[in-house]
Image (spheres, rainbow, N blue to C red):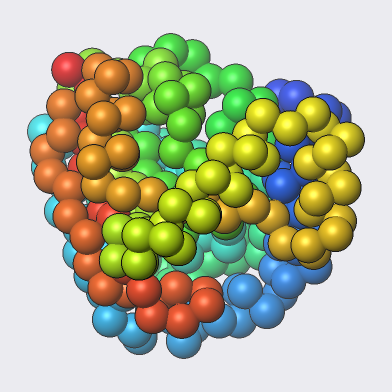
Length: 254
């Protein structure tokens, strides 16, 4: 496998701005060792095999070598699933996760010619416009992280023309209407609070806000940003809190 190098992501000194992201950073720093140990078990599960097949097929579909971005890479759980990569960048908010990602699961199967680990997030990292042919993001959108118009616009900028974005997101469509409405209102309220109020809320609850998603809402945001949706589906999956549903999306920059 290629040597894995670490770089300091631009803007790291200012990370994280949002209290929810600060909570996530502290939690992932604290649990990185356990998370890496769980990788060995995770790769024997159905969800892993399902996602790894998609990632292998998507990354292999290009007729040339690619640059790929693992957004929220954690411990590098999916590095070995990427094919055809000249460069693979792992971006994560947690330095401890990135330290663990220097020795990812199935490291001997990582085929990228160059792997670079960078601390940062979607809004602090600085990459040239059109730099990546593939961006993938698995297990990120839900607790503490939302699929916003701004997020879609940032991914659009980083993708080359014809580039692909593959991601999953917690789906709340299966919830009763009352519960779904309650979660949506809470997420919207959090998004407009001033920083001191967000800090107080996260401290009081001990948990970041939950940003649920539904197929129609995600489709609308992607199309507004200019993406062509190749496919979008909802699938029963194993979530941190138990079995639930996840949206899985593959879209293309026109």
